[in-house]
Amino acid sequence: MNDIYDPTFVKKLFNKMSNSYERMNYITSFGFSIIWRKQFIKALNKKESKIKVIDLLSGLGENWSYLKNRFPNAEFYALDFSEEMVEKSRKKGKIIFQNKIEIFQDDILKNELKSEEFDIITCAFGLKTFNESQIDLLAKQVYRMLKKEGQFTFIEISKPQNSILYFLYSFYLGKIIPILGKLFLENPDDYKMLWLYTKKFESCKKVEAIFKKNNLNVQYKEYFFGCASGIYGAKKA
Image 1 (tube, helix red, strand yellow):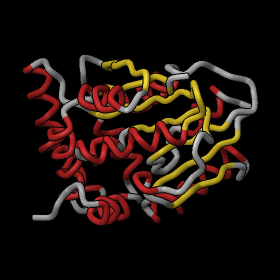
Image 2 (tube, helix red, strand yellow):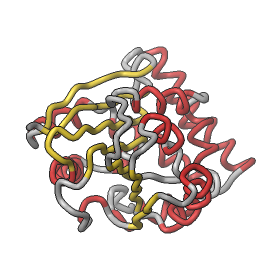
Image 3 (cartoon, helix red, strand yellow):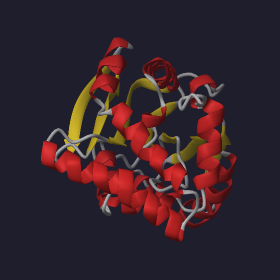
């Protein structure tokens, strides 16, 4: 069996899902992904000044319209290592930012972006594809890339603690979504992987602990009874 956290495997998976990922993200979250994206960005202080904002694991650019509203005068950047995701996101970048966004096709865990360069770092629904050692590397990169007192916010689909809700959620994601994937989209096995990642990830609680260990001020938050969870905070002064 493939190492599901191997970057080559993950990149190949998301390249294959790039044509349908935005729709499936909406379907797998019962439409809550749109609400959650708005909510996790509201953890950041709204700023009118010309700051630098980077969206990590940016996918198809689903966060960008909300970031633009929150930081209307910012310089925007994005990073994702999936070539297909990056290429398809450029159309959204043209619409939202009139092409005034720089998109990097790179691996966040070993990128060469400048240190203390960004005021804001965001990331939605990408954490589950990392194991704990990779999350530690991610935290180190966030610390390195942020300016002093710079802010960050992350969110991820999670395992709800309520047993009834977990049963319904796991049945929907584990059984129904692959069927929908087979009927309307691409290979259903690709979408089974999303539930496997979610089960192994559980919640952002472990991410909170790892980020704290890396000298970041962190707070943990749950969304809709734990169906999603996140962290937000800032680099210590």
